Length: 128
Image 1 (tube, rainbow, N blue to C red):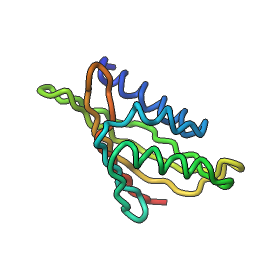
Image 2 (spheres, rainbow, N blue to C red; image 1 turned 180 degrees about the horizontal axis):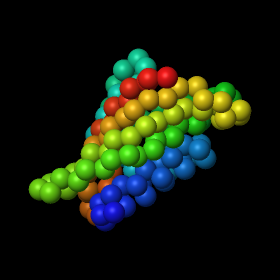
Image 3 (tube, rainbow, N blue to C red; image 1 turned 135 degrees about the vertical axis):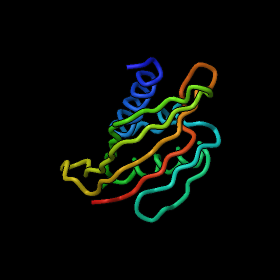
């Protein structure tokens, strides 16, 4: 495993942990300031770190919330730029019961900024 792959897998694990813990503040530093997320079912576009953190805060405040887990498969680092592509599978489970509610695949573009890997873009596709 390369150092880039290890760094991105570590950051993804921290992101997953923040979702499981309902900790929106821990998500912010993992996102680039101008990041973009395209959601899996309705293709809503959520642009910017502040907007994404607000979405997570709302999600965490609902009593019947979901826990979303992203599981990286392939991470491809660019040999010429400080960027990488993560591809994997995601699932959303009911926080109270653990029942699977939705799942699919995703891709995430990462960039190294000031020594830290941050997410610039994510796109999700709901398949189940």
